[in-house]
Length: 194
Image 1 (cartoon, rainbow, N blue to C red):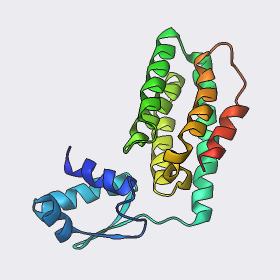
Image 2 (cartoon, rainbow, N blue to C red):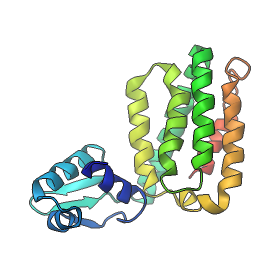
Image 3 (cartoon, helix red, strand yellow):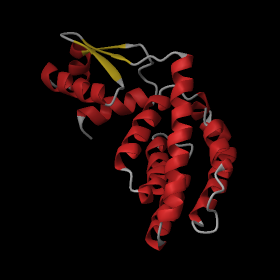
Image 4 (tube, one colour):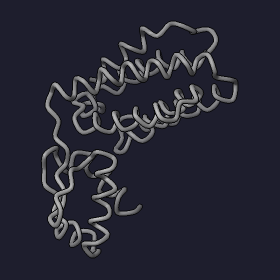
């Protein structure tokens, strides 16, 4: 795992809280590297909108207001439901197989450290048949921003069964051609993850 991945994981797991300062020198010492790879890693994380770079010092983990976070969730609902609707109409049997596999894999990871990766792979598999790579990239960025703040995500261990039930309902989408046009359960799923 590279330096960018290590720092990203620590941010997303909450080891660095929103608004906290990441000092280049401290990170260089922690990871036993020079400040140059740390600077480069922080720049990469800034492009992902996880941090704001402060030249010569390090970076600050992004901090969003509740209004900004609400706006992000509203955008997610709109964009993800649109992707799902398009995917339902364009998906084929191979897509169905990929979604089923991703669902099984991510369900096994639910409640464990790093589960967000499997969750994104499941959602990505759902949305790929829509053939809208730019929209998918925007959704990924929005989901990453939410991961820093999602209080329900912190409770996943105690809420795993309820969460998996919601995802199980969502997996009905795997029956692509039987479920066309029925997106209301999906919208309520996204609202639950707030």
